[in-house]
Image 1: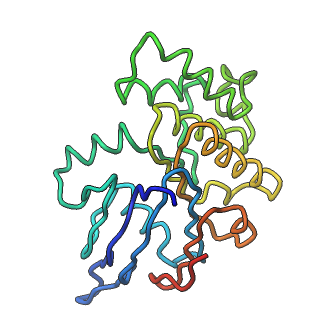
Image 2: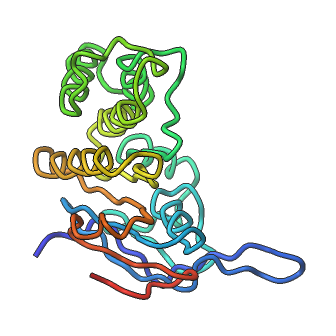
Image 3: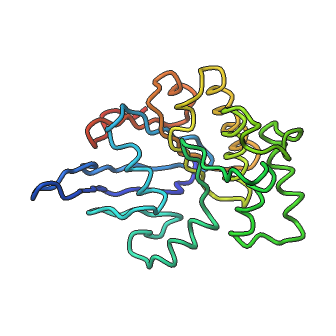
Length: 227
């Protein structure tokens, strides 16, 4: 049985709304196993992105607790949370969020600078990551010169460059066609196998569920199915 890297305990997230509270998450309890692809699946508004923000220490739950490597990340300072995000977590966003004035190489190298990766090893690591996602021949191209699928692969290379324990990918295939979406998910699966990275991915596409090691299906802020 694989080691549990993250676990949530009755996580709730409420937002003030017109003198009342809107509960985006209504008590989610889940385990994220190390070295697996876990998917949070559900329609828009189901709570999956809100849950991803909780797991990635980008937001605080209103109630409940989240453990990372056995320790709570909801009861520590913002500075410690920032440090965990920069060194032990990677993020891939639906909007890609590449820096338009930087080449693919520079976009990936930038995260290494932020995380304090040794300067003498950055070039080799950037090249290795871009090769892993099939972009060795495109590393000096600007984002505007890359297709949507290629841009997303650069974003994945950037997310894994600093050897994070876990990568969070929020709807990384939402703007891609089916064939390219499957290529992106295969990259995640290969990274898990080759580097032992843990990946948590949100999707509204039920067709991708069979590729995951674990699926939590969300609806109205609750887990309605676990596969």
